[in-house]
Length: 202
Image (cartoon, rainbow, N blue to C red):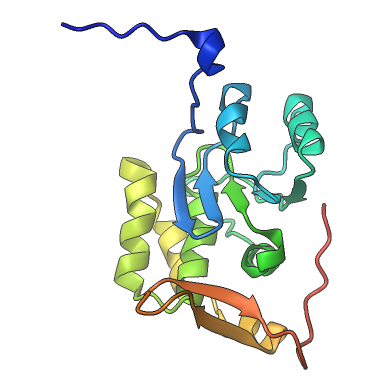
């Protein structure tokens, strides 16, 4: 077996992505909670924003990272649930997080909760509905990241989440194709005659 010796100092270490990391769309990423060992990898994404979906305070070392890189932190404190929990995810909170997510001024953006499975999966699932994905594809993507721990309550939330209220709130959401023949869509606000949502860091 041929062994390759890596000079850690010369290569400045190995870039390690956070757990459950993936690209959702151009300029939109998802993951589990970033550890300090992931900071080098996150630097390569040139993030403008992070959407954090847990109620706990951001650790100081993570705050130092976002401050040092001028990254906006948007925190939406959604409690972690179990499949048997009777308390549902607050629709209003998800709607507010979606407003941040679809504003391209916040891109590149990373969405994360603790494991990058349930809360993150619900937000991405609602985003997919806004993109007019069919429900079966939305559920398939959610389950791919949640694995055997997928939750029926999460699927019910995604299924019943009303995206029309978000469209009405934003007044104008433009689906714009990027490049000839491309199937990738980005959500942009119209620059004229559009009332933009009031977005604030939490």
